[in-house]
Length: 182
Image (cartoon, rainbow, N blue to C red; front, side, top):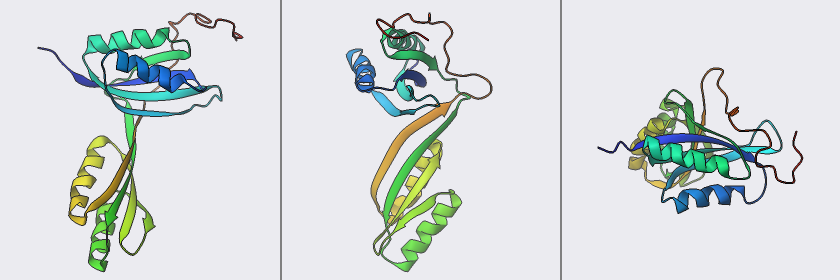
């Protein structure tokens, strides 16, 4: 029996144009769909961190990590444990034309600690930050109020405790052709 699971990868890369394209092409070439991806600069101005979620076996995930490590702009790759901290940012715009509908949306938002970030005569927009189960639960409850739009930014994740993404197994300067090595 093949055991396909959701795996979360943390990838530290150069903060430059074209890196996201290189990484996503690798997954596409290998036939894997990226379920979620979030990218942003790190504490260092020259690096970005990608949080990538895929559905794959453990063996396939390790193969993809090894392939990622070979890419020129990749500094480090880590498969995050199940205990890692994961959060997702979601915007949900719901129809709320009546006072009763607005009141119901406010109550649901309070229960889930969501923030109301925009109110108009016919709609309200909420922002939710939390685990996937929290996002799914609030989405189900808001279906009665008619969800007009929803945007999910993708999960970000960080390992608990002292563990970091720094990968000491990669030889320093291994793929730095022509670049200054620190």
